[in-house]
Length: 122
Image 1 (cartoon, rainbow, N blue to C red):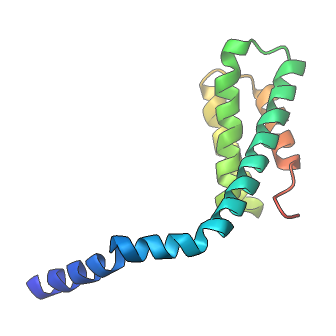
Image 2 (image 1 turned 30 degrees about the horizontal axis):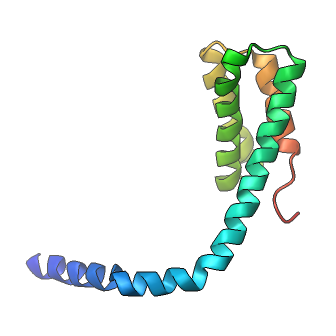
């Protein structure tokens, strides 16, 4: 067992050497920046559409953060799931926020608007 721990620690030290990590990140930085910018643009679009729904539904501004969190959770699920798995995940989210006393119809409209935003690069 001690041998296994020693070997794991040696590998971890090699993998996390600050100089090597810095070199790897320097090589990946431009691509990382492009992906981050695309994802932030995507998230802002989802939030903007959610705010438009909230405005049109006359939702009190004090409740905006809760509805926007619902939209952000949909964004998060879109990054990990697709198809029927995504639909099930979003339904669970919807029920969670309804249980927290948010309006189901507004949440459904936000869900529909968030799904209407095309993925970056589409």
